[in-house]
Length: 147
Image 1 (tube, one colour):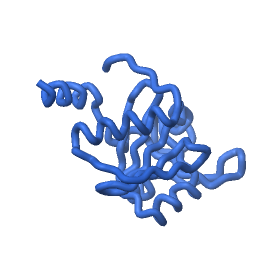
Image 2 (tube, rainbow, N blue to C red):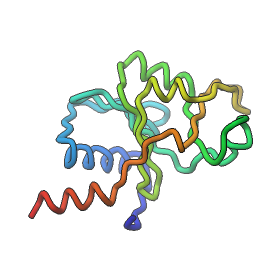
Image 3 (cartoon, one colour):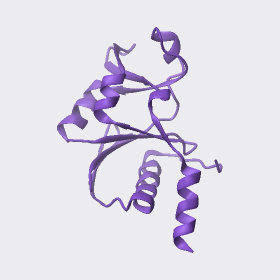
Image 4 (cartoon, rainbow, N blue to C red):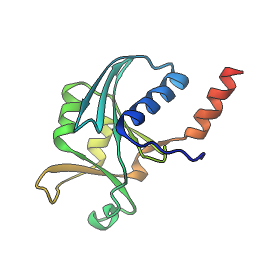
């Protein structure tokens, strides 16, 4: 993977939308930000959520029996908003450009519900249960299209 650095939420949303447009011809008409602009709900050809996550949940495997490795966590309040707004897929992007995707209902079904140290209900899922979107393959497809 080529080295990249996504420094903030706005750049993360812009990056994901550019990739989706270039590779899936995804078109959007409205972006609604929540969670201090860390998450975006995008209304377009389908409704998606883009979550900028600075780092994975490193203690995921230690916390949940039968699980291993890292995970990702989303506040239940935000998942509920995704449901109300009819989001289909969640895209999780990291500062290094690593991109994951999961159907919203599969995320909920496969995740663990718990209360974090701030007293908020959250759901955590193993990164092994997320579909990694290979940016290098997307980049090469973009370059091939432009020739």
